[in-house]
Amino acid sequence: MSAMVETLLSRQSVKFVQSPGPTGAQLDLILQAAMRAPDHGAVRPWRFALAQGADVPALVDVAVRVGLAEGKPLPEHKVANARMWLSKVPLVILLACRPDPNGRIRPEESRLSVATAVMNMLNAAHALGLHGFWSTGLGTYLDGMGEALGFDPLDEQFMGYLAIGTPIDAPRAPQRPDYRDFVREWHRDPAEA
Ligand SMILES: Cc1cc2nc3c(=O)[nH]c(=O)nc-3n(C[C@H](O)[C@H](O)[C@H](O)COP(=O)(O)O)c2cc1C
Image (cartoon, rainbow, N blue to C red):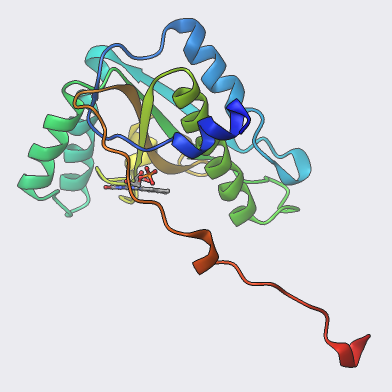
């Protein structure tokens, strides 16, 4: 098996990570991998912000503040869990999408492009010996969350958090589904041949 495919097949998400996070050079490679995402119409819809070190736990305070301001306070146990999670995470990439301003390319295609960029980052992190986890918890879908994190409220849609670091506990390989349960063959209709 090629080393590349082996890397793809051995990737798994790990939520609870700690330092070391990526070095500057590794982060550079991870972000370069994002720029290789498929992108219909060369919209370049990817918008990221990097939160590192002491800025990471502060993300919880932002979500709490926005939730309260919108009359949708985050449940206490979720806040406590998020504080525990982010207390050790060395790097969070804040994810957003800026769809085609001309409307040529459907906004959902831009979101798909951001999702594939995230996948590339997860795979690049894994190839570099790190682990990541994409979360759309912590107030992601509150109306004002993106703006509170510095994204343009009109043009940029917040898509969650990508945490990257080193697993706190050794990850156990997850059971993966058999692709045959999800794949069928398609044949042309003989009547149309
Ligand atoms: C868009 C998106 C949002 C996600 N948000 C959450 C989340 O908020 N909480 C969570 O527990 N898992 C979330 N997940 C799932 C994890 O990131 C991860 O994919 C899952 O635990 C399975 O791990 P695997 O990537 O090793 O298959 C999300 C996944 C995606 C694609």
